[in-house]
Image 1 (cartoon, helix red, strand yellow):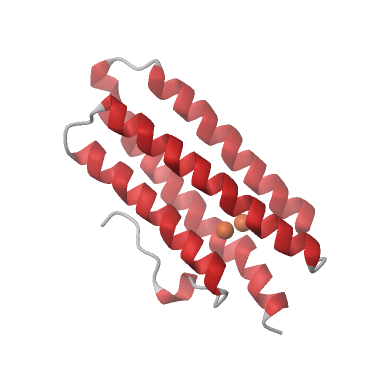
Image 2: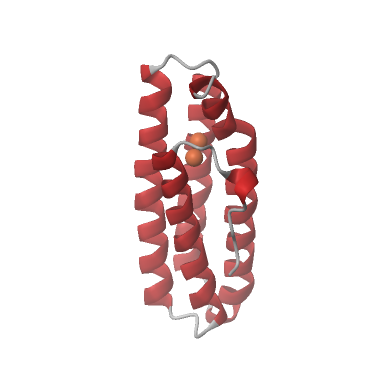
Length: 134
Ligand SMILES: [Fe+2]
Ligand SMILES: [Fe+2]
């Protein structure tokens, strides 16, 4: 397993925790494909699924934050948007790669996804928990 959410990454808000676990599953699927045959169709398909699911997750969080008027909403939304700008740029880049560039590229992409997600959960998503479980 490439990325694993240990208990300290759980918000204790079931719907959000499940969504984070699902995002990790997509990242792990991407990792599996990158370790095996680097099949471009499988990688593109996984990236599309990951992007689509993550988009839904961000919308879910933003709706909750809006509903409960949580502080820091603007900064949190900004981070979600920035993630997508980077992910989409990397997905475009992937389509232009030569075959031998695919492996280092997917490694770079996986590291970005892992670092971003873990850091974002700890620093931003945890603020939702702090307010909701007060
Ligand atoms: Fe999140
Ligand atoms: Fe978030």
